[in-house]
Length: 93
Figure (tube, helix red, strand yellow):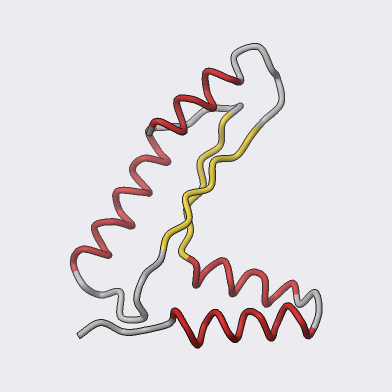
């Protein structure tokens, strides 16, 4: 919220659009209530924070990595993404 308000204030006299990206980690088994609630809260914030100059977008690291993989810039990037997945793609008990 504080970053959104800061960007909104900074954009008062600037017609350019900015994007606030809320990036977060989730385990592979996101069915747990806390993770479902977190996604709903992020979606609710996006609805409440509609502004033509300050866009709010949220995504998990897993979603970001999938997006980058689809862009497939290079083998080096794909190797890095694979290492990130190996390290951070875990399930909680």
